[in-house]
Image (cartoon, rainbow, N blue to C red):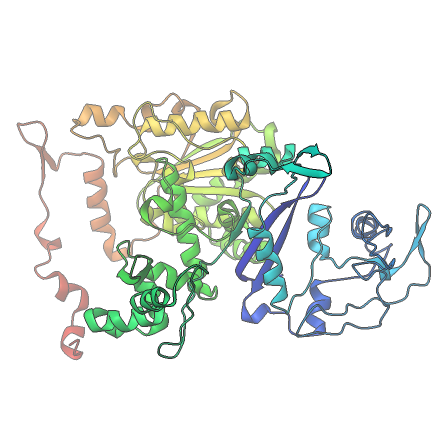
Length: 615
């Protein structure tokens, strides 16, 4: 339907106890409904073609017809339908800038029979085809152009719960005089006595589900002439008291004037900018107080329309909230906003691929794979396409720096969605993760706490969207595996088995781990060499199940860099050029003189330093 910039919704419980929602959504400027064509694109008040859209046609018959009209349901005292059904038939949609539009409702050749009723398009409640087919429920969708819709929803927020009051009065007769004994008024007891709560509403409230929500916090700024502000007072107040109180209590406008006389910092802000930096504190005098929680920037960004920066900001809020959840916290604990819209939905958006585009990239990159890469790529695809018939499902790709591991992975990660397969790509640290398509770091991907202790566990709920993503992903890739502690690796394996509900190593998933154990090892505080080695995933019981592949060709190094490349390999292989000191901890490496650079900046930029003025 478009990108929303604001929303408000209210949950209401019908007389028989079932809940329904009233929701109002504002769309961003480019998606606003401003003409009949836009209305017809999103909303229909007609039966669809029974042949071309058979399922939708049946759903309209079941869920989107008004009536039959009865006095108990919608007829007024004069016998007319309060919802104005049946509607008038018309050939096109008429846009109404001050209310609801008149929807296109064309005559149909063959009336539709539902039981004893005969209906046509005049009885169809406006609907959105996508929402109706997705949820298979009554969802009335209207194009709103009037402020009355906003007032209607806000009325539901503040009207309170259903009430039923019964009072039994005692009548005493004394001759011709009748006296009625009034019950003692108890406000608290009356609140409890008259409140009517059905079982579904009770369940809703016990589980603390939201009864209403809105995307924006609204601050009302008063504008008035000097001494012309509105004044509220009790009827038993005296005029002098009212005047005195009005003279000493500021409005938001006069409070802003007073603030400017005392606070130099406030003078840089206009009236409408003040709420982003100051809070209106209702005390005896009412004053603007500087914000202590520094929410101004968040509020400012939050109330603008959702452009690309706002979407990125919303994603950031979603991820921050997700990370904090690992520690039992949320954004609100740190004075941050919660993301707009369901968090799980934001995270799910990462897996919304353009299949044709991904397939095109894969087709372009596959011919560029060298012989070593192509062999690995082919074996992985065999496991993907043959499903459980291939026992070889755990791959370890060992490769030196520059051997093309990332290129091989990204080629695979474009091939998978192009063929309707989902994947998860993770790294231990952020920079390598940013090199992978849709890469993420290992702790949030599996909801692992930080720091991760030996007895720590994943906090993924088995029925959550994150668990579903693991469940339905064809491949899970873990890069920079040499840095992963075996306890983390073991917990990932345990959690995948739990989600997949089996005892197969790593849940029977296709797992690809990559890395070079010559490089960074797991971080073990205050540990020696032996403790660090024992923390490696090579010491995990899962390691024995992986099949090893080697990428030996350095495709990154230029011919003139071969000597330096070979020298690095000698160091990595712990050969004779390394001299270990007597303390057993430190090692000395002698660097050849001809590869030592005297001035790094000059060596890199050369004549550019002379030819250009970088001031």
